[in-house]
Image (cartoon, rainbow, N blue to C red; front, top):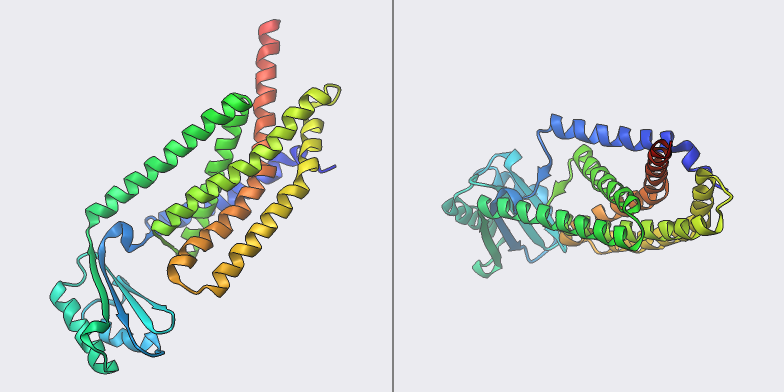
Length: 297
């Protein structure tokens, strides 16, 4: 039998250290590395017609923008995405930039696949809608779990969800990875995965509460976790292998922007379901039992 609840302090310390490092990194870097979807700017996509080294394009771009205000991504080895921060390049200079690239690589006007300008107001609205979607999903899940199980289970599950989001944000902050719309979609997916894994363990705890009335609360919870841990590990392993294969063998930026946070979040979700949600439920249960005992006396 696994001794999970008995080592609650260890699991809380591990998570706290990671989250504190992440928050410190956010403070040091003055926030997350938000992508152009949120900050606004200009995105230029060019069909280069042949394989190329995107580093060779940098001198052309730096004629019009500073090196720390743009990002380049090579798509399918023959396409180039240039993302420039908000108000860092004018429409006229964007046209000149494409003409320089066109001349160097002997392209045609039709090779300019798209040139889009994203306003900062759209980015702010996107952030607000993303936060609303996250808040609504958490409230609905809390209500469902409280109705299906009990309120303490719901609170424990929601705390575990916040844990998963904070862990993912911490990893992104420390590594300086870009937060974009794909990241938001991935976070909502992570929440759905994590809550389903947590519910499996909570369902077993609820069953064992009735079957093991002679057992201590900690022992009963550890037995319940031990009975479901193999299923959780098998599920997370198969899920992560599949996502990792997509991440490795489908080298599209939009796909990788989605699969990377999924990988981090799924691993964190499995960890929190076993080592965070259940111990928190035990703490809440003990606290509630003490209150009942004090009121009875």
